[in-house]
Length: 143
Image 1 (tube, helix red, strand yellow):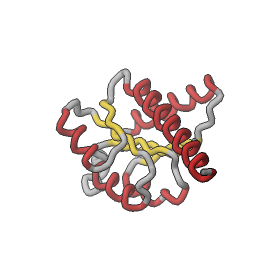
Image 2: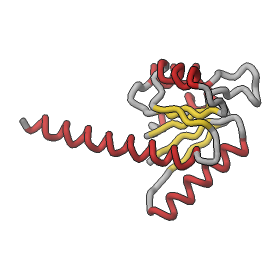
Image 3: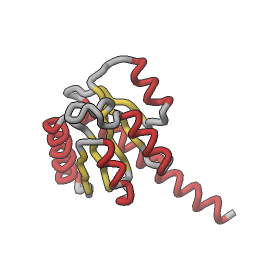
């Protein structure tokens, strides 16, 4: 699975990458992880066809003129509406989560000690859904 992690917090980004690599080692999953500090860098690399993008909501910690998470999300969805994007934020506000969903985010996760477990569950659900979608498509083609 090709996973894009996009966050301007270098420490959080690295810890998330390590968590996914450790989980892959423990479960025999295969992750190809690309990390980006800005939405612009993520967008420049969409031709690598990520399976899932985990995207920070703010993205302005390093460069105040950088695109924020919602702007990046909109551009991702313009480019390929089928890429699941999970938004991450330190804000635990329902308005922020709803706003992300209005911009077609697949889910919203608050940065906390349980964020990685929640991300794992969401990713697993996304892949189960995609597998069912493929199977249904295969059966429909046979009818």
